[in-house]
Image 1 (cartoon, rainbow, N blue to C red):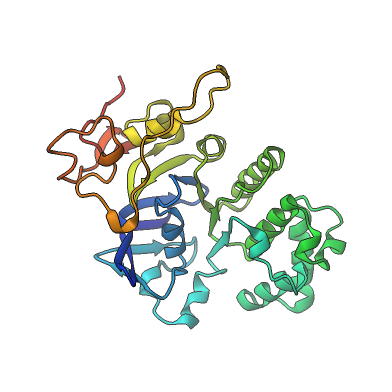
Image 2: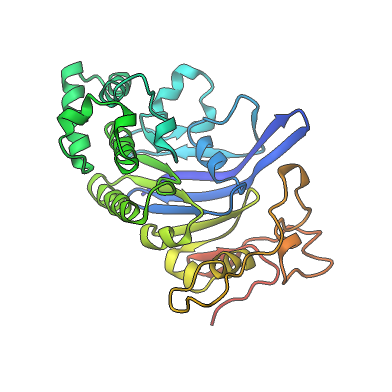
Length: 330
């Protein structure tokens, strides 16, 4: 069952320097019970794409073209996300059908309120639970994400939590409304590797239990390999490669994806040098014509890549990439 359908999403921002294109014609689907990894360097447009699903981009955001975002939670009517115009209608998606885990929970919790007060408040907004029932559910969720002595922690402030506990508390808060879609924006970046593994296992278990879909945003392909069912690789606002995780990581078809994989440390050869992708990602006001990656691509075809936008090519039945120099694995 398709939970989320994004078609031709284009997001621009009106700035003092001019109109900036952050997302350009992005399309993807996400099924219930599936984890889709969205990867790419900083500045690729991952977070802007995610925030578009809840209309959380700034007031200067412009959703242009024929772009459409459709959310279809099980047992509910489909929601045209970009068709929601009034703030009072946003509760259908914000914290209701969609919840979001942000990269830095310390900046997402209010420091002057206890964690429990904030959990109860959002449950009272999005459900018809009484205050007592909201408290009981919040304590239950804190326990289920592995926070010991949850009754005591419920009445503590976020600065009294460790980094891993903050992230778990944010997951508990996000899941307490039982959303159909969970957006996880770099949820493990600030955590040590041991806590990362625990959070990844927790999210997998919750997907299996609740049947929700997860959009998992990260720049870490190692985390994606452990977490996601499918992966979408993003560069400068465009999706350049999509497919099953094993297909994309074992047989990357796009030069950008191959560059990301080559930049990872090789555990079987610790003396091997890291190979960074040459150059820097262009600024949003300096978007290249044609293929947006051609300014950094060693395989760029002269006279073609710098002038023409590549179309999507099918590599296998479930693996697609946009590249003129596409190498299809045997």
